[in-house]
Length: 249
Length: 330
Ligand SMILES: Cc1cc2nc3c(=O)[nH]c(=O)nc-3n(C[C@H](O)[C@H](O)[C@H](O)COP(=O)(O)OP(=O)(O)OC[C@H]3O[C@@H](n4cnc5c(N)ncnc54)[C@H](O)[C@@H]3O)c2cc1C
Image (cartoon, rainbow over all chains, first blue to last red; front, side, top):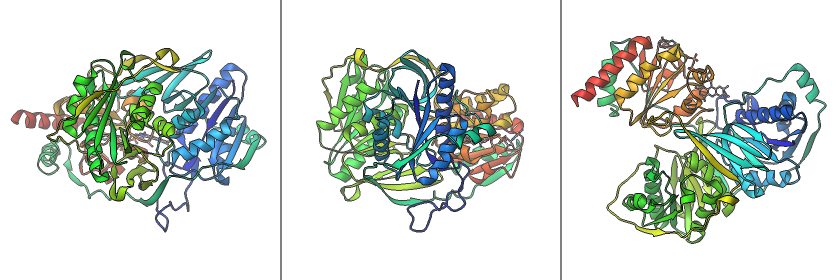
């Protein structure tokens, strides 16, 4: 089976965020970029399905600037077969991103489209279900594990208070969260092979964003905390402070 | 265009706490936009009785789409009903909770209506007629202020951030006629596995007691459970760091952080948790943060409001006793 996985270039989760001059972007100086961790879960899921089936291809797609080729190569090194870089801006308007991806994906023969549940930069959790809706496909979001039975995927989805089991008919879109698909490391052989794998690069058709960034701000500094004491004796003072100062008990 | 529609989430006919926050916020936004707040509930039969009280949170009208087949969440059908309700009015905004259902439903609604959407918002205003939101990005390491340039603006609200406000008003309940055909659904919820009976979900609790690798062994969680019970298991829930979830000590449903859940409780305890940036991503917007750690240089003390430096195996029982004494004393 052919599977398409949408991935995104995002700053490393350890990165300290600094706001660039002008206040509407981050200072990318010194920032290390990675494949968004949730997308790595999705790549892993696709690779396992292909390996279990013994045939099919895993195609990676990203919307981003030319530098995102680096993240596509990372996914190819994990074992994906080919990649498409849609050159264009992926901003805060998830619907604009979903449309650009849908335009590309309509042409893919892939009964299964996987994405990470959200991107580690905008944290929005929108593109998967929007993409599915635009393509007229069903979608299951925040899936921690799934298995295929013929043309149906049986998905475990974590919700408040438990796990929902959702069955979805293919063709479908599934967004993956942390769970069964701990991503593999790329082997040296995989990294070498990735250099020769096809990576198509083309201009994206991204509609104008209708949600515009007015400002990026750092979170307000939390007031300086206080060590109330050491060891068990400090418990009484802590409880007093929580009751009388913070008024939360 | 000034009305605001609030999605009123319920489960098994019980209105969820976060729904009061969403309806209250919708009512405040509607008055800024110069319109009315309406609430929409979707679910099984007999729903009108349980959602009628939402008028008391500011909904001038409470629309109810009830059908036996809608008792459980069914994404395709629910999205179609929300869209129908939106099209029947003149809404400037549609608000959902950023719950599992809201996060799944709202983007579909936005795509069907062809309007942009803002997720997990912590501030929303309608000043000047346009909806402007503030939301965390980069795992809470920054905030984006975004102007939404199409109407209605679809927004999900982070739970536990917006106040629920009762007003002395009563909304009229209106039944919405729905016709549903489950046989056409391409995705079906076939089973629901409850995490552990009666325990509160970490994302909904107003107090969270989280443990990390410093707990040493899953059996030691009894110490955290005791503290949770002393605080009240109706308000307090257990959480965990990724390290202990990956070790198999705790279920992933309890994980707080970037690849776990985002929580904003009134009070957060981080016990034996170092405070890695990915853990902070999930809990830094908590009201009051308490850290218990034997390492005075642990990064968690950098975000904590109150800290105890010490061995958690000594501190936890003492803390639990103090909380019990406080509750007993009233
Ligand atoms: C992409 C990515 C995503 C991630 N997502 C998450 C996430 O969602 N959530 C998350 O939590 N982490 C996440 N992590 C992992 C994160 O980086 C840390 O590894 C993890 O949070 C560490 O967990 P910990 O604090 O329990 O363990 P440790 O870092 O091992 O810290 C244990 C702490 O316990 C203290 N301690 C030990 N014994 C005692 C004692 N007897 N009394 C008191 N204190 C004691 C120690 O001083 C130490 O500070 C993620 C990492 C990556 C790369």
